[in-house]
Amino acid sequence: MIEIRHESRRERIAVLKVLYLLVVTAVAFTVPAFSWTRAAQWFVVPALMAIQIIALLVCRIKPAEIANPIWRLKWLFLFLTAAYALLPADEPSDARVEWPLPGVEWLLSINLTGLDHAGLMCFQIIAVVLASALVRLTGSGRDLVDGLHFFHLPPLFVYSLDRTLELLAGGREPGSGGGAGRRKRSAQGGFLAVLKRVLRGDIGFFVESIRGNMRDAGERADREADRHFSAELAHDVAVVTGIALAMASLKMVKLLPGVPFASGHKVLFLFPLYVLAARLTHSRWGGTAAGSIMGVIAFLQGDGRFGVLEILKHVAPGLVIDLADPFLRRLPAWALGYSILGLAAAVARTATEFAVVFLLASRTEVYIFPTARLVPNLLAGLLSGFVTMFVLRAFGLSSRPNARDAETQTVAAAPAVGDQPQGAGSPATDALQAPYPSESNPVGLQRSDGPSTRR
Image 1 (cartoon, one colour):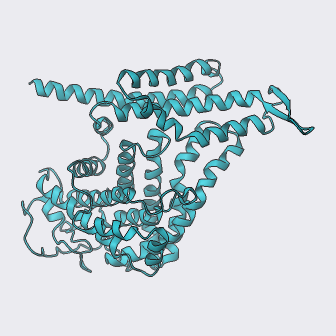
Image 2 (cartoon, rainbow, N blue to C red; image 1 turned 120 degrees about the vertical axis):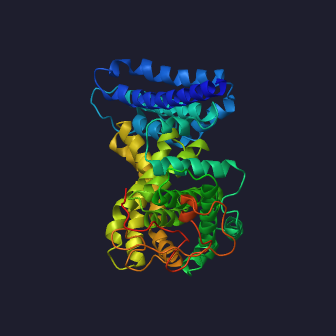
């Protein structure tokens, strides 16, 4: 009884923390946006920021951990300050001061009203980032996940997220069957060496990593399969979990460390995973589910610079790919089509930066900052089309009749190779049987008999 009460209390705290994060984000961005609340903006926003700092200190979070996410935004803050202080005023009534530059007969005109606006923007971002850190760094570390369960999100996302976190927390390296290790060794030659191999069609290290992660996910799903799982849901959970693990392991690999102009180079391998999730699942939103899980994992690991808003960076490409995939499947399978899809997904991947600038109601010149980050993502998105073609061919999904057209065909089960996994006959076991793909069964996944419906 005591354990039940403790569990219930922990769940309530997790839900309250998620609601608190949503409220802080909403207040930080809406108070300066409306004329009837704008008079209180310099009281509300700094107070929100101070509350987050005090709460983190009370929870015994080290000052260095509090300052680290703020320091990562230094270039954005500098850009905002320069843009609003030095560019021409938006309104004629803006207060300005002119300073003579030493040694020259020039006057430096500084917009004090713009400087005030830029400072408030920085406080808005800091308040949201620190509220995200409060949720992430305090409690059990799973408070965001437990809180999300309360909102009755789609079962595919909920079950796949749980399976992915259990595998990551279990100490087993994603793709430990051999794929991830080979892929890490292959990455030691640097990004350009990996790119040369990819352009030659040599992506064996990448495909083996995906297969290894799917096997890990299938084995875990088999051991812990829920009785109320349908065969289709068990199949989709195994696929999405395996691909989310591949995304997480890819995030850990430093193909091109320390080169800021190529910050989007991992898109080259991430976008094919989104497409693969969209193709292999019965669900209409397989890519979105995989991206959502990757976004939550990245948030829990402190990835990104904008706190909880960084999840949007991973969700948006999956949504674009899921929406475009039914149309793309009706076209001839060629790399150019997937390259165009990669360009669209690359634009969506910068949604976080553009969303932050939009929520701040910034002047037009500030959009230069997210646009600059768009350039390397566009290049990697264009090249990802070739990787996508190679991956789909490796999984037997490149032919025009889609491997997962649930309305017109079903795929027979492939017999297991070697020993059968434990718990044979459960939905999870039926979802993942053969350890290696075949042309008729791309990743050894068995679909349910009869027509399926896409959720």
